[in-house]
Amino acid sequence: MVLKLHTMPWSAGGRRVALLLHEKKVPYELVEPDWAAQEHKSEQWKEKQPFGQVPYIDDDGFILFESRAIARYIAAKYASSGTALLPDDTSDLQAMALIDQGISAELSNFEPYVAGLVVEKLIKPLRGAEPDQAAVAKHEATLTEKMDGFELMLSKRKYMAGDSLTFVDLIFCPYGNALTKMGYDHLTNESKHPNLARWWKEISTRETWLAVKDTVPKSFLV
Image (cartoon, rainbow, N blue to C red; front, side, top):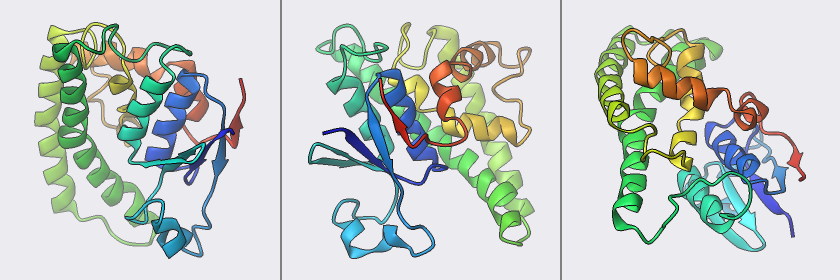
């Protein structure tokens, strides 16, 4: 049974999961909820995703939600397929601790502030509302400080969780892309953040990311 990815094609989390599926060469089928009818808020949906959100996957009856958890599951279950996205030795406590550290750093120190800017600068105008400039300034100031931290991380290691590419690097893609689309140069300024710029150039130009950057394809067959 082919894996089913339940999400809206434009969802950041959905594109994050699709990126992992493409990297690992895992066939999948996209299943879109009826967004206008609020299907994702229905009791039936909440049986699978109790918070009424996207995405979730159905892998031959195994239901899993939260895009980072799904990414880790895909990287582990399909370890021998496609790109290796976990440490060589997953029993290595320190190597796996760096994986958890990287996930936490993205979740706590990156996405919240980029997502805040997305709401103010992209979503509110689409809805005919004015951005809260005080909120924009606060997110910008915090993000500037956080990016210095990521630069320091990458000055010590080639990737976010060590010296080899892992799924942790890839989970940054959706909001990293949003950040650059809004005109911020935190990930591209080689003079201020040379290690971030080096890292982002490699991550953001991967063919797998380019395949899902704007929308989740309806399906992927190897």
